[in-house]
Image (cartoon, rainbow, N blue to C red; front, side, top):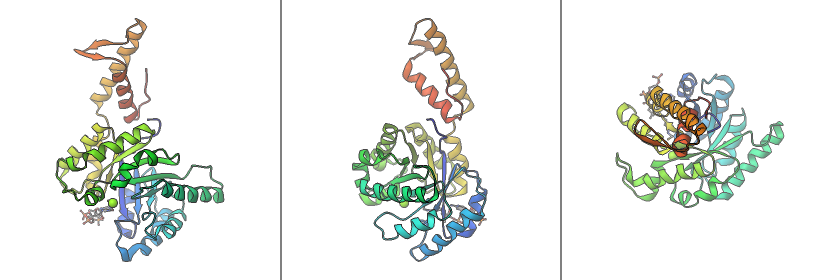
Length: 291
Ligand code: COA
Ligand code: MG
């Protein structure tokens, strides 16, 4: 992972000025100012007005500011995108993408904007929500698009479309959750795990986040300030894990010099795949991979 991992991506309803102000003070990696499902049908215009104002006047602590427009084909996308780009966010999130043509549409729009503003091509980043059965079937085509930065897995929309009943274990959405992280890895993208709808049950949030991190997700979508700490923790390797990764890399170097690619450490076999995993751990911890 060469770029900074996005561990926490906080949605803020784009029409709610109090929450926008609050969001600016929160320590998350990314804020996503929302025009889609976090905003009521009769408040879409309010969101189009307050989001540019927020981008212009609030100092966000997040290192990346994204705007989520309504789905392409909703009829709102043109006007949403115009408002979203007014004050130049770092990227655009498009929900419920299903077809390559939708990616081509947004790519062209972003390209036009870059040309008009004299920005370098590709500097406006694109994130997409994978949250429908058709998107899962088309993952290979979608994830290959060169403009993409990250895939976002939407479990609730998917479950609704499947007619599935959500359970705490999540086996009903596991195939899709796994397919998204797989496609992201295949095309060098980051994968952002599903939202937990738990607002106050920290243990549940922690367990769900840890499982996503173990699957290979870079981070998780967040909808409430209470979720920030447990999610950030779950996606940040512990000091013990970092120390162990460093130990593995040092031992690997030493064995390589003796001409050995596989060796034993603490009663376990270490070879190249485990070395790669150790490098991933250091990258996730924000430490330069060594060895
Ligand atoms: N962004 C910024 N601030 C938020 C927030 C968010 N997503 N969610 C809650 N807060 C703020 C509240 O405004 C409140 O601050 P205040 O006391 O200064 O007013 C504080 O955090 C505590 O919130 P709480 O009272 O526990 O929750 P709530 O009833 O105000 O809001 C939700 C609950 C679910 C409505 C709210 O968290 C929310 O709108 N989340 C985003 C939903 C969304 O975007 N969905 C679409 C994407 S899946
Ligand atoms: Mg959704």
